[in-house]
Image (cartoon, rainbow, N blue to C red; front, side, top):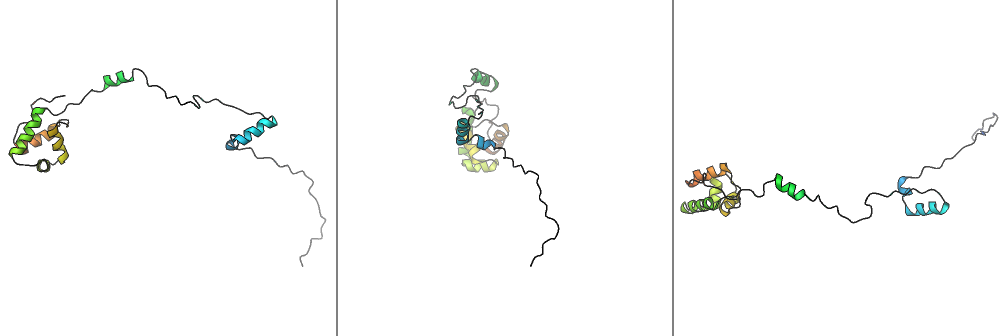
Length: 145
């Protein structure tokens, strides 16, 4: 059996105070908690946020398009029709496919296709490689916009 101490038993008469924990911000935004606070007469803080609850889209600055046109060129130069036809004619005379030309100039076949279709922005290095492989002068001809 456990033994008890034979000393005098003393009680602690100091009061114990229990504090309520502070409500969390998420709980304060809860609609039930807000309604309960309103019913009990407690103070409820309301904040109107800027443009809250509106579906308005802000209109861009009126002169934004004008500013953009001034800073950037309207269109990039494309390969001129004379250059396109010269590439195609020289390639067909040598009986080469676009893929073969691309392999010899160490570029992708899509690059040769874009040059022949006139969609490519002229690159002097690529034109020089094509001149060497096809044996035709391509640079020095004007490019169109």
